[in-house]
Image (cartoon, rainbow, N blue to C red; front, side, top):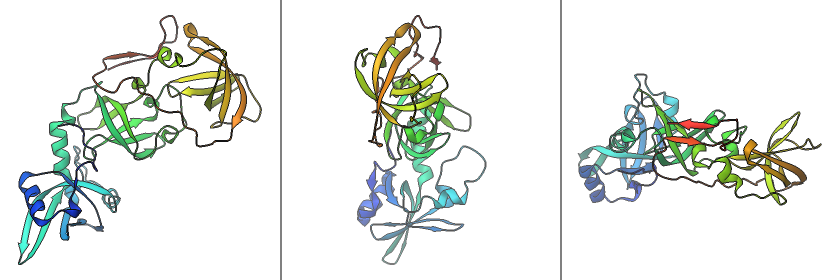
Length: 300
């Protein structure tokens, strides 16, 4: 089994009765939008004109003993939910279906996620952004946390500075604890200092984003894993898009000296994410250049 995003399976809301019954027999994973939350009970769906119900206990796969909060279940209303059909009841000419997202997620864990190891590079989808990190769907709605410090070498104020909800990205497995909680990392896929610096040349100009203003200068992101330092400049604030002149590139010190030439009015400018790694398993990653005293590395 490979990674399947929650919405990348067959849409059950347009299925015929025969197709639904076949999916039940084969335990095929489907998706539909949750229409209503019946408080204390579960989610209601319409599958091709037939009623379907997902009990509270079947909405999330959890490896912890505590129950899933009702507020979390209610948030699934009007959102795509994957599931397998677990029971079919016939009353006269009417059919009623009981469905489970939990069992679909268990399939994903048993056949794919549970077999992943630290350092494995995987595709995933950003589903929620918080101040401390981004939550990603790593298979049938199973969520993993990508902490803000693991997003890129270039520091950002919020994960929203790098991602948006619904964005398909790559990440690597940082850790997985005994409760099934998975932590992701992202910066190792964005290239080393030298790999990123190779796209720039002293004596040329480019565009970047102001990420930090310090007493000794202004840090400007040129790429998600590369920043340069410009001298202090009045009227500049964090988040500004600026045109800069590349004064010097110093690999031994991992420094790029910049001069701010002007600000850019295009506020929607976002540095494009360029992946240097999109598959395989990483055991060791070193961002730093050979002769630099500052060591930035990851050991998986």
